[in-house]
Image 1 (tube, rainbow, N blue to C red):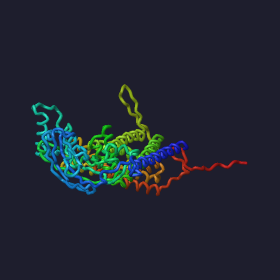
Image 2: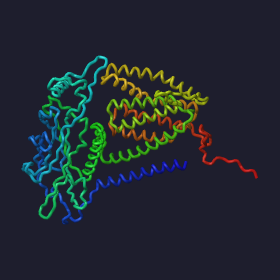
Image 3: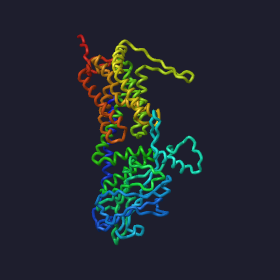
Image 4: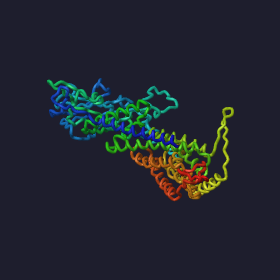
Amino acid sequence: MFLKSSFTTLIVGVFVVYVLHTCWVMYGIVYTRPCDDPKSTNCIIPFLASNPKLQLSIYTSLRANAEGGHTLIHKEEEFDIDKKFERLINVSIPKKTRNNGTLYALIFVHQAGVNPWQDHRQVHMVAQLTTYMVPKPPEISLIAGEDQPEDVKESQQKKKANANPAGGTTGSSTSSDHPVSHWRSRLTFNMVGDHFIFDREYLPSDVHRYLRVFQNGKKMMYLPLLFVDELSNRVKDLVEINSTSLELPLTISYDSISLGRLRFWIHMQDAVYSLQQFGFTEKDADEIKGIFVDTNLYFLALTFFVAAFHLLFDFLAFKNDISFWKQKKSMVGMSSKAVLWRCFSTIVIFLYLFDQQTSLLVLIPAGIGSIIEVWKVKKAFKIQVFWKGGKPTFLFGKLDESEKRTEEYDTLAMKYLSYLLYPLCIGGAIYALVFLRYKSWYSWVINSLVNGVYAFGFLFMLPQLFVNYKLKSVAHLPWKAFMYKAFNTFIDDVFAFIITMPTSHRLACFRDDIVFLVYLYQRWLYPVDKTRVNEYGVSYDEEPKRKPHKD
């Protein structure tokens, strides 16, 4: 008991240190030490302090360095750095870009009336207006056999012709198997509106790459800090480019930001870029972008603390759950069919999330959970695996009298549920087959199964409630692991509004809250007698009564 308490205390201590260290790092990011004496030679003063007249010019080019020509697409002759604006324009798409090419935007902030290409006091940034991504597979009606609309067909046929001008065959692969150029319909950029005075000795490294300094007499001055917000480029805003896309809409959005917010966005943008280098796709990175872009900083800080506690409770629940099932020798009071159903449902959910190309943030935990549930089924049914000649042989254990009694209650509860659930699930699958569209028959099967799991799956938790009711006891449940999971259930309710996921998966988070409240009611209704010896031969009474010695 002492070792277990010490291990849990160690984990909680590491968690506290992690949270404090993260808070200190975040403070170092948003706080920048200013120059104490503006007249000192170590100070770098802002060019904006002289209130210059500025102009905004945005160009497009096939190359990031503007070689081969550039085209002016937007201009703000009286550019006010403190004034927020949003403009919707149409951009002509060059032929090379329409043929699966790229296109860049060059953003210039320069002195009014001066050509930006000849202005020595200009600042500029380059933003990519296109990105490559595999298009979403078309969905068809499996009964009627209707394919995608005619305009989509023509578009794909033109793409195939462009990709294979010689008229040769491409084998079994289609154009949808390869990344194609997509248009980023939003261009968001910011400038620091603070007249902050930097100290040369304490210049932040993250700002250094955005800083352009020049000598003005005896003073060092820096030009306005221009920043392109890549985090605002979401997958939902992408538009597939085809040969008929002569013009595409572009929303230009600008707002001034503080220096602290700029440094924070730089670090977050670098973190997302690092994840992409480690193999995260555009869709995976998009989920993380949504956490930062679609929430304000206060809610983002709350999200961080909630995520930290979620991580802690996940680990503690995992530790206690594995420990409970590792020591489990008898299934008295435990619904074996509920364990089997939980295993089946987690596997179905994992396959569904994989079919929907859900973010790795959701997919990886679902896969790990499926493996754990398979192990629980092995323990619950006392399955032993023997290998003979490379082929597995399964041996099922026998139940004792107490376990048989629990199994009777479990079977009775499942019998009543089957009268309601099976017709509903089969009816929902037939309705979806007739009226909805799917990528393939496999997609229909997985969607039908997961809809049954999400819509009615929580009812399969009722056999355990029924067993608890019949036995008038909840002492057989792993309450430590259960409480940690219950806390995470409410935390998942928060994440359901933050991380992008299928609607049915989001509703399932709230479904579990109902079951948790019923379990709590049973916990109150059937209190645990700590002086009673459980199936392990252990009593929870801290001070057991001892027989008095005879004098």
